[in-house]
Length: 288
Image (cartoon, rainbow, N blue to C red; front, side, top):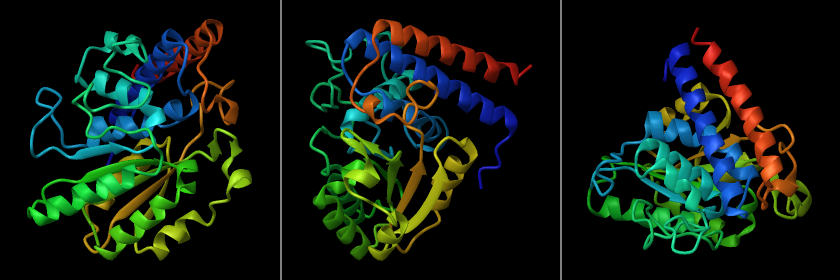
């Protein structure tokens, strides 16, 4: 498995905290956008982009790269922040989020930002797009060369198209496909189990012939181990159900569904930055 050293874990935790700080800064500057999901998924994105993913920020069109599909496009601040910190584009560009003429739209738009694989916005369509990529790689005999990673929100699973796509992927045993579900238990109208109960979520994915891995979405080693374990599954696609805390890192935002779809004010943003910087200081102290 990953065999993390403490030093490696701390490096990733520091990077995730930097990504969270950038998320707050860009949301405050934009005055609109989603807060809870991006903060909650920062650890998963950090492990993927800085530990697992086969990619080259200096050559984003590298043909052998793994593919990343963000189906739940509203959490794009975490995608943009992670890509910027990876070197795809300058970190300072993050402050153009949602501004007129910006490459960083409120949902990823491939025509504006060619570093992203797909345009997203309508929930429920990303898994079908990822399946298309996985099938194309199989037809081209490349399904052993790269992986397709597709991010989904748990509230997004209310969309029926996901279940049709899950059936198709299971039928075709797309072992090169990895879905990652942000299981944060909230959506814009409230808690998922009140709006449309999903449990037992893992059993439902298994029934559609998927290999299921459940992880603590804030444990760097568990996340890395899950991505690594998915590479050893050859008879079916894999779904990683990442149990996350929405708004992670800012106590005032955590587990409050009202932060699903709103940004912090300048005052709230300053409070959040102070908390994240304090956390960053504690993480750095582990190095000493």
